[in-house]
Image 1 (cartoon, rainbow, N blue to C red):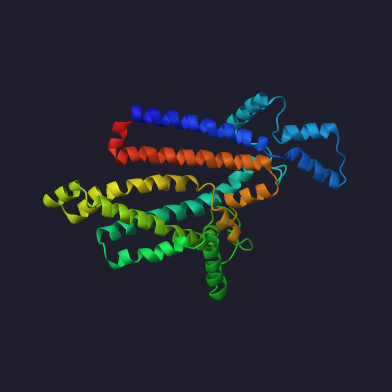
Image 2 (cartoon, rainbow, N blue to C red):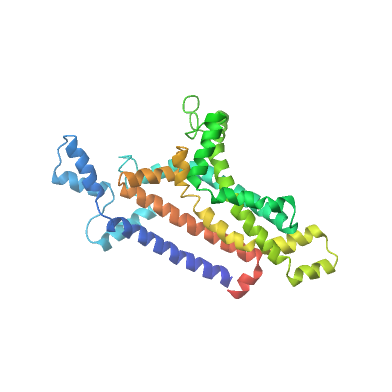
Length: 329
């Protein structure tokens, strides 16, 4: 119980620090969203009065008074789920814009990250168990995909599988001409079809790292005394491989997986840019390009809390897999 209480307190403090930094950073950046939208209004010939500026400051979540008062207003707004108004998608709420993009990123980047981890760890376990096999010799090929710059790898796959051999579409999240978003079989099939190539790119570019790390840890773990003792007792090789070797060898990979899982919400900006995929990465790029501070702040907050949540989950799982961590805590 003490282990879980300490973890909860630590992550609550970390969440408060992330929320506070998320409040401060946009206010320390040069520029002002109110000035940006007023400049656009002036360029289009719309009248701008002091009342217009005051109304925009309130609507865009700038708050009023000192920074301490704005911080209090910011926390109250967070408790009510109010992240302000998006400048790019004006007058849409930031929470609405993020909620529309989040499922795309979670379904694509999340599934691809989990698949690459599971496949990479499984293949690495088998390669480490049978050193010198064809699977072990395959590792240099998989690590080559990891070493290639990601955007080049994505562009090569786009060229080969959408132009040379037109198997997949090169852009978009679904067929906008024949389907509409919703819980329909046609839409789900279209989304899977459009998302297959970006997911394949992510899996192929990251599987080598998981495979190599797990393989090396398996080799190190197999030299431990408790593995020799298990073999001397006559335990089945499959039980030694899974319950003794793999269970301990996978622990370092879990830490890396926690970070990767947390950044699933951030999406892969390069992936979503190359494939014009409508996710959080594309949304963040648009917000930065247009100085949409409220949207940037909302996206950064979601990313920060997602990373903390994923690390908390992995920490708790770590304690279940390896009871020694709870004893040290």
